[in-house]
Image (cartoon, helix red, strand yellow):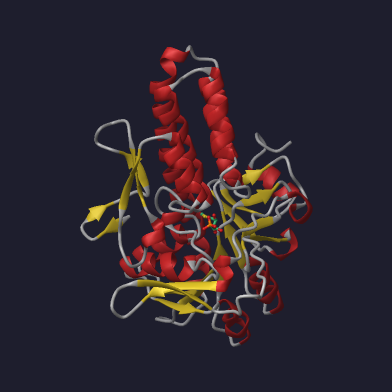
Length: 365
Ligand code: MRU
């Protein structure tokens, strides 16, 4: 997407043709900084410490991490080590393991001398494929927004609520939840987005708001607890969120707080959609609540709040007593029964085993 006059993806091969550039998302919205990763270890740190984040993007970053490792040592042992090291960086988003499995399955049968070139080509292919999948999600989601717009009075906005950042920053380009929104805005449909701030990492306030502002999409930042109130007052026409892992029966794991939005949406008859590329479906699990590992992050993310002062300096301040313990589960699971539809690259699926199997008969088990 455009930043200033330039088009950026979130990750790309440096002009030296071997190292990898990526946007350091920890700095947004205050600074737009590109960093250069030169090793698998650099990529592992970037994923673990959330310089890059969002399920599809961490998958692509891991694929490039494997390529960087193959350049140094293309042995079987080195390939397995890269798989292990990168896989342990974050536990919840399935795209990470999906990309690592795809890389290893592609590289293992090749002679080691051919693996480095092949790994770069495969990582680029996974990145390009992500862009295409998101474009298709955008087209399918646009039809839903169009239908809602058609029921509105002329000039009335379609109000969409989103949680976390499932925008272009969470993918290689376009985003999942934001792709239909960007296409609707381009098509001249008046849209307005309620952006949940998404404590504790504030992906909504820091990233989604920055993205939407950059693309001129009308939006309003709200605290995480405001969504239910807005829905009760008819201020939300639909919810669209992304997901880190969706199970074969349609349970949706996404950023902590998503479940509460789904409950409020159901109570108020607001459609609750999830946008996802097929690599986010984990066909090996059914019950999301019981089977998906939920990342537990540092309590400091809850007890300390970071922001930029008037004078431009970034500060972190404590908001609770020193002795108060904090818990920080980073994701939750929304049961399939609360999901109106899954917007995928192949169309909109019912959130159920049958619904997903109908769209993906070649993948369902
Ligand atoms: O902890 P994060 O920032 O990696 O969490 C990201 C999300 O929860 C997104 O909603 C999800 O990855 C979908 S991104 C298209």
